[in-house]
Length: 121
Image 1 (cartoon, rainbow, N blue to C red):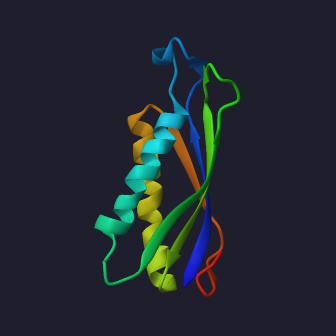
Image 2: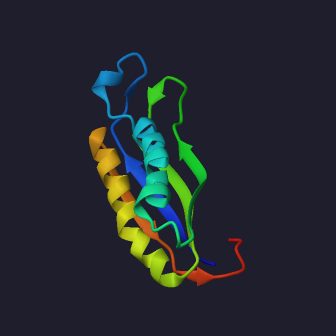
């Protein structure tokens, strides 16, 4: 297996929880990205080439009544070969950026170095 650690940041704009229409909710955008990213594996990837996308951490929000402007996620992309891993990266970036944009937010995606192991990060 080959893998790459991924850091994803979704940027929105804060608002009070009673006036959500005045902000851009990074949590809603980030959660939608997590669901949409599964299409990379199930619909955009050749099913004969192993590919796994795992979100391993989500951190956002600081107050119970404030819509947060930033969500940071940690994820991993695993593939059976290095070529397929690298080929999937632009698609994952596009999904993050387009999903964020649909909610008026932006997304940054940073891929770590490709590494090889026995299947565990």
